[in-house]
Length: 76
Image (cartoon, rainbow, N blue to C red; front, side, top):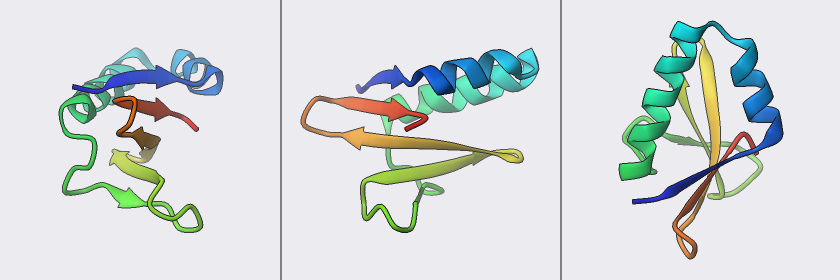
């Protein structure tokens, strides 16, 4: 299982959202802990295979996977 590290910008943005939406986003992030590269994950162009995104409704979660340290960086 991977650990999650949130950037300050990601935490600030999550605090500004509706609580119901935040719960949906956090639920999706918890699913990423088990399987960081899911079937609907896409690589972000221009960053190689380093940066990924998944959608939650109209929102996108940007994250980085560090297999060496078992870490997922959110909002990079």
